[in-house]
Length: 198
Image (tube, rainbow, N blue to C red; front, side, top):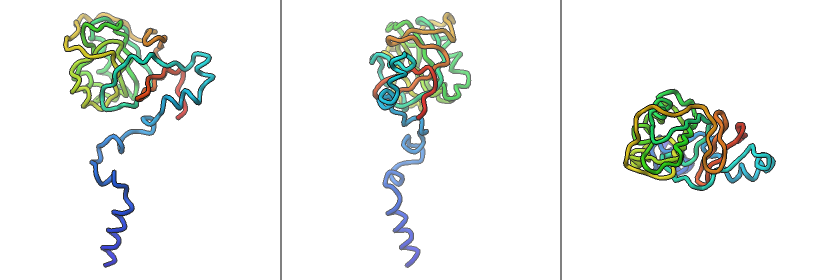
């Protein structure tokens, strides 16, 4: 009788959400950083905003991938309708970083697809921001990575290997430098000169 009482007490004390989902759901696997709120960051850092150390990108990006909230140090790429350097970068260990790709705003082809989304997930990238298009949207949405892009286009890019790495890029109304920090959630995208305290 005492054993039955203990089991009953256990089920009453455990939150329903832990009993009704598997252990891999995002609620139970996201890091504390994933809960970072961009709106709160703006409210708490007025001085950083006024001096330009904290900037918000224009609201032009669509949300893809399983991670609606992500953050990390920035690695920049500048390419145009050519994604060879994108693949090369995502093949390296991301270590929680965010790849920011300035594709010149081209809507004529995709720079990131499902294979690259999976590659980003496998190599530990936190997110990808594309000033351009993605494709294989359903596949990207299955990847445990945050992705922002201007839209989708089923056409693939060229494979010539042209572009630049670790250079300043101008995206969404602001200049973004390699090594700065990016914070993204459902409200938008912030760029910070340094890592923000959570």
